[in-house]
Length: 84
Image (cartoon, rainbow, N blue to C red; front, side, top):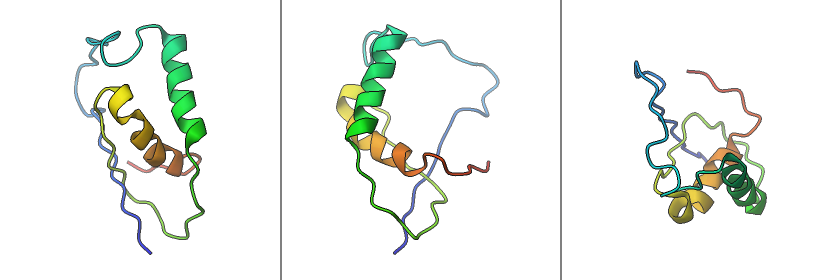
C-alpha cells in the first residue's frame, strides 16, 4: 500500500503575514485555537502504516470546515522526520 501526502507551506515567501482573519475562520484567542486543534487531533485514530510518507496534501479552509480532516494528515506525520 502506498500513502501519498504533500506538504505545502509558504515558508519560502519573503514576508511573514499576520493573522488577517483571526476570529473569522478560527478562534482569535490562542488558547481557544490550541484547544480546538488539540480536540481535532485527539479524535483521530491512525492505523499503523508500513508505507513511507513523503508528502502531505491538507485542506486549508476554516478549521470548522476542514479541521477534522486535516488532523488526519498532520497526525500521520506526527513524530516523523521531515526533510525540506
